[in-house]
Image (cartoon, rainbow, N blue to C red; front, side, top):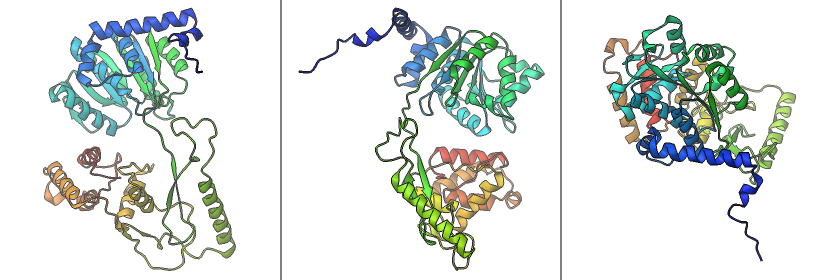
Amino acid sequence: MTAHPRPDAGQDVLSPAERYAASRSRSARDKADAEGELRLFRQVVGFELDPFQVDACVALEEGRGVLVAAPTGAGKTVVGEFAVHLALARGGKAFYTTPIKALSNQKYTDLVARHGVANVGLLTGDTSINAGAPVVVMTTEVLRNMLYAGSSALDGLAYVVMDEVHYLADRFRGPVWEEVIIHLPDHVQLVSLSATVSNAEEFGDWLATVRGDTAVVVSERRPVPLWQHVVVSAPEPRGVPRLMDLYAGHVDPTDPGTNPPINPDLQAMFRVSARAESSHGRHGNRGRGDRGYRGRGGNRPGAGGPVAHRRTPPRFAVVDSLDADALLPAIYFIFSRAGCDGAVQQCLRAGLRLTNAEEEAQIRRVVEERTATIPTEDLDVLGYWSWAESLSRGIAAHHAGMLPVFKETVEELFSRGLVKV
């Protein structure tokens, strides 16, 4: 015979104070949903908000600052978008700040789609669009400069959203974020969003000290599973790299726990790799590079000959492996502008093509439309032809050294799923 718990049995573990707090939170959510701007906002977004999103939005509508810490993909930006909604509904201004230009460009596109081009502006180091709009997306450095200059653009500012606020801990750029938080006018409500703040309560206490009443809203539920893989070089010279799960098969990727067991097949590959490395050391270096690779996308150019063991697969081989396992589109992080450009050329030389004929035609149309104003005589100097060819194959670099129109084109094509890596 199975014993069934009473419907209210879960409340027995809560203290009276905790039950009162939970009841008060539910009441606040119900009231906001029935009477406030949150009810209108929920109709606009068109989906049911998670409890942490509702809690943060309620606090924001009550006039409090908010720190939201939740995993990537949980929907933190909904809270920032509600701040934008409140600003427009109440006749104020909202600034949406991001750490990098690419995020600013993307957020600008998202907000224009919802609120219209007349209501949204963009300010980055190389772009200025509708700067007097009630909602302006910008990099944090731009806002810092406004504060120090006493810019008139700050008049009427009611909300500031700081996306990826964990940049506050960055050794070089952290002071910019700290200065913005400290020097914003007292009446401005601050919305801080981060997926990686581990000391949310401590950080929230500091925000309350410098900004006033701040609600700390934390969600640990990861709605988008985080799967971790490792690409391993094949032990044989002409072998194709293998993409393997990092953890053993029984590990739940959404909750791996502390020190989860490693995939035994991966450990075996490491042992084979170590033996090959040891053997290679005894027999001397017989060659360099990755000339022996034969991938799905084409042959690696270069003369033949014995190939030394590589601990790290070449980048084009990694992309080829991701394509084979249907894991594209992907972002490949390389912390160097020259490294990004070099990786694109490596993929082109390897013969990789990640697009079909229809996708290539769409890409070429977008490229031609975006660059129509560039004089023909300047195309060679700007490296247009190589850039356009790599795009047509679904491959692109993206970094701060690119011509703005090139970078924005890459962003548009990647967001549409046409650029694959």
